[in-house]
Image: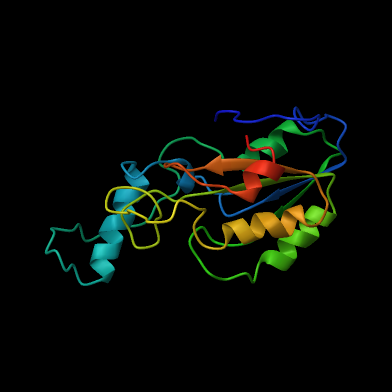
Length: 186
């Protein structure tokens, strides 16, 4: 990760924080940390081909199955939990999917943010070749904003008044608009 902006006194986070909210579709995803040429992305592509009756007539193995643990890695949420003090409460909420229109998870995300002294919001892309991916080969987009309702999620968390640290996991340039002016991305 690259720290893009650190204005003010929010970062580095204090070791004395009593509570942190970790929110977003990429907060607890190991899979989304990797690009479209990573093994899990290829397995997902083969599974999608199999489920769609193999429209490209590719040779597919019979026993293919989805994997989440192809190399040792941990999610942003797991890393944060490992670094905070024993008395720090970590509140997690996914909020929304990477590329979905549903805001059903917003209430839980807002509740998590309200319980916390700081909200770490982890948004961005899912790289790969399947229909639910937002970046990668054959995943061109005409819009450079965050996919799905992620911008709305960031706004809902920002509106709680809890300080926000924005973490981007993405594989292409993103136009953040108002988010860039109000949240310290890292």
